[in-house]
Length: 117
Image 1 (cartoon, one colour):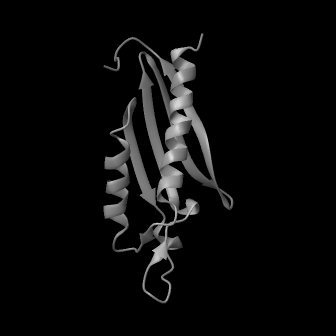
Image 2 (cartoon, rainbow, N blue to C red):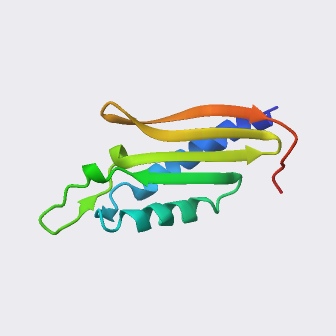
């Protein structure tokens, strides 16, 4: 039997992977970065079990090409999200570690205060 805690960790990993692979390569500029951050947040908060998502893009890595925009890369992501399955929560992130965008679980918790519909 899979526990709610294990399911929450699985859901967090799936959501990070989906977010990462859905958006890498999108056209971006420093001027459009904040609207893309909000679009990513608004799109992904709709998914089952999501309770919170925060997306920040590293504007320093946005070097315009000859057409005036960059392509979103994994190194630009600073993402935190929380999923909740019944009483189990998992908080995970995408954050740069050296020259690689790592996905990891930050913390997990179980309590009885909030439950998913």
